[in-house]
Image (cartoon, rainbow, N blue to C red; front, side):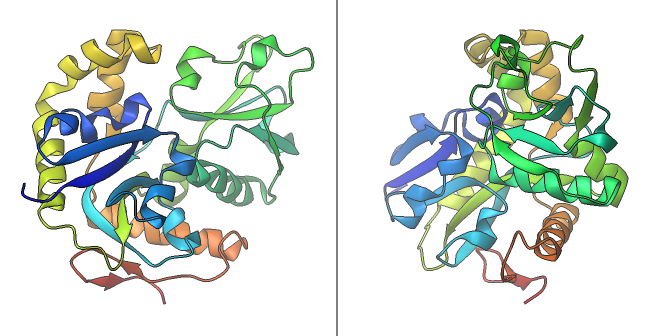
Length: 274
């Protein structure tokens, strides 16, 4: 690759099949952080692409393109985007969230409105380790590796709701939490091709990736293999794009998105509602 590009990703285990090996490619500088801040380097033109929460496409102050060469999604259970509650879900009035993913917090509101005809109050979670809290919150939304590392005490939090599973039951569609995004005016050269090749190469490396990254992320290796190889999906095809568009529409109906932008792919195709 003749040009140099900075690629912004996430630090969770779930991103490894999209980025493992990228840092060894000529001209690629990989930076990593939590998903709620991944779009910032793109907006500041310090990164060419970012693996960003899908809702950020709509709330970004700058027009974006979706680069359809990889995503983090599911077609049912996610394992790592879950509400834990001390009361029955239909009685939940307040959910504490860690704020790591804008998309997951919005999905919580969409699911509760559809299933229980109300949106619970959202409050910031002070610590992801709710087991060490002197006053455990009624309900919490946890995402990512912390669900495995710091799962709330099941004898206290008797009720759980996997948001990916709930979305699948509601819509019959997969769900996409994050995908590659770039500024609409950004020349990416061969970067999309490189990102797609990295994803495809890593399809056959699930066990190797789990062996390298499960323990540092706080995961049992066997569970990481199942998570990366079976539970999560990394493609962005027609059904996934349909699901993103439907999710945006539901967020707009709830007032979580002020104005709906049409979906725009990096190849210039515009989809969805204007």
